[in-house]
Image (tube, rainbow over all chains, first blue to last red; front, side):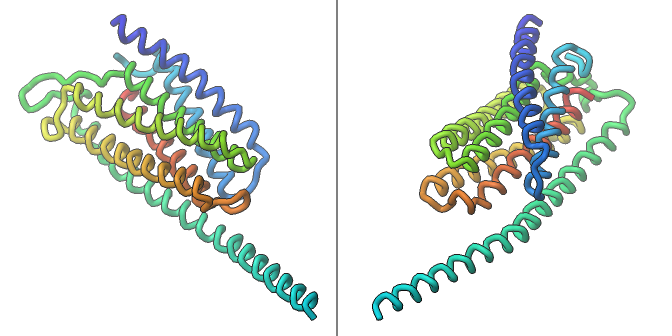
Length: 65
Length: 210
């Protein structure tokens, strides 16, 4: 149980760093145009969403165990 | 006479350069569209397996199900999966930085971020191998095990191919295959790696959170 809490703590910190970085990059690239940039923005947004899922899992709002 | 010959040679080289540049720009869009369509086809492939998993999941009264020996199967290790997910998402961020560095002609930064991406990709694969060794499931033991190993295995295979792809791009970039204005291979590699990250978002939700 303590190991799981520790692991969730690490995951929380990592999710904040990665999610924050990804969101900032998305914000920075928001005005860019072209197919590759549009796809990159979509994928960056989904990655940021993934970090939110990890955060919710760390708080026990989503998932069990 | 010599000067006029030199001028005509210069003009010919310039015209050829413009022709090659224009051809690159034209074919780049076509290749990019082709690559995006390849990613879409991969989305369809994963979607088929995901819907099969959801169908199997909804065909039993409880999830995790009971295996053929009558034992209730446990849930997956969520805490470990959270860390492994962050490692993969982190590799997506470093790949984005690598691409940005290349666009801004910062080759040293590009190399650093590419190495970080490759290391994080390998770390994710290591984490998945660790999980495979510790998860109390087998491929043929239950629908849960079968679905889990099929989907995460297929994703892991994509990550493995992605790591090889990134190593190839790294070597090519350092051999001068790409320039500051012609780097389609790097763009495709970035898109592929982000795609692999995003597929994991869906798998993480389906297997560990749902």
